[in-house]
Amino acid sequence: MSGAPSAGRIAALRQLQKVERGFDRAFGAAANPWRHLGALGFFLFWVVAASGIYLYVFFDTSVEGAYSSVDALTRGQWYAGGVMRSLHRYASDAFVIVVALHLVKEFLHRRYAGFRWFSWLTGVPLVWFLFASGIGGYWLVWDELAQFIAIATTEWLDWLDLFGAPLARNFLTAENVSSRFFTLLVFLHIGIPLALLLGMFIHVQRVSQPDTNPARALGWGTFAALLALSLAVPAVSMEPADLAVMPQRLEFDWFYLFAYPFVYSWSPAAVWALAGAATAVLAALPLLACGRAATVARVDVNNCNGCARCFADCPYAAVIMQPRAGGRPGQQHAVVIPALCASCGICAGACPSSTPFRSNEQLTTGIDMPQFTVNRLRAQLEGALARLDGERRIVVFGCDCAAAVGKLEAPDVAVFSLLCTGQLPPSFVEYALRSGADGIFVTGCRSGDCQYRFGNTLTRERLERKREPHLRGNVAAQRVRIAWYSAGEEAALNHELERFHAALKALPRSGPARPSRRKRMPA
Image 1 (cartoon, rainbow, N blue to C red):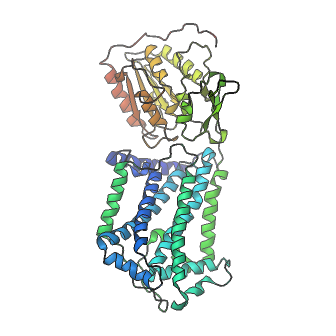
Image 2 (tube, helix red, strand yellow):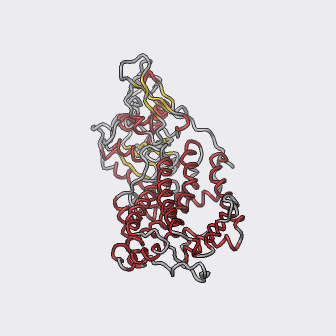
Image 3 (tube, one colour):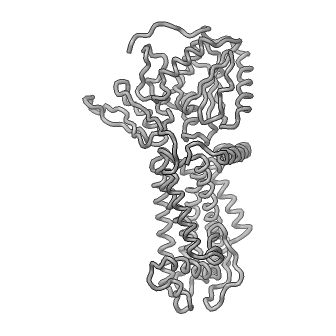
């Protein structure tokens, strides 16, 4: 499989981004479900779990009482039990939708390759756990739909010939179904979701500060929508199961049960083959993805002061702190785990030694990216500032993963595209302004759309003096413009730059016309 994205994938990504931007305009980035599918998945799990606990309190595990207890809860206690059952049903369906969209979105962004292989691979078995959890819940109702599912499932499993006697024999007559069967179902319906929850937390183990809690607006909005649906269209049981009669008409839940008609229209073997092939392809994607190996961040122990800012800001826990050999007690230095490094440069932007004001001729920082060092950025910035000419001179810092900034280059505009906007040390903003720039324009991926998760958030916090290292207070806020535009929004980016250029005309010229060329002392 080629490392380059296909035309079809690019087209699909463009359409997805249009949808995401539409939701941004309607709800804002924080409440946009497309940008927080993982957090929404965790939220829906807890809704399902809470409503399930309530239903379990009133559930009768006997073969005679299973159906009647659920039906009594639905009709006799519609204001609480009925609502809880409907919430349980619709939140479970929404969980399937969110997981499917999350999988598709991650696939389109190729977030299964390289350092992301662990999160992708641990997510594959969660799909099986999810469907097993939901299907088991339908069995417990023991109505006509549950009867169909029980027979179809056992016939599907019998094709594997793993259990000796056919499982479907247990549903030939009503006498074969005992209360012990429902006790086993309850055990599975509790145990499998617990395994799913454990798998979900393993899934995010290599992600620093995982997005597992949606914003209040998104969480409450989702809950309100589920509650409204539960009141408008309550979930109810079909007729009680009767193994002597074949159900003729079923109210199907296609989110969980879409595969069952194929067991009969095709064959159990064909459905197993399709499910196995789909699972194998998903699991093999990290191996099939061919691409250039990521360049790992490099630590210079002599310039690392052990401040742990790179450790705190790394989105993928690729930086750890270790005791410094021969140092004072408690003195540490950063260490990069190559297998986890995303090659984003956020650590370099967090390092206090990544300042262009240092007098070293060769600027060596505590942690840096070999393919685009802070020293190289400083040299390019000085060269660009020396060439800038115009009434108002602007320096643009952009991102390789966001809206392309290359076409913004002009006689009065110098452009720098970083690995990620988070790679920008705040001191470069002040340095550029002191060296002749009239304004600094910082751009990158939209909120919730950062290729490396936190690049835009960390940059904003640093420039707004809410996070270390922060922009110093002597920098005028009106000379710094922050605007987020994802790939494909180049026209909007250009318009925003024009607005910033017009705003700068109302301000006096800033700093010397050219950067200082004083000789630096050797390191």
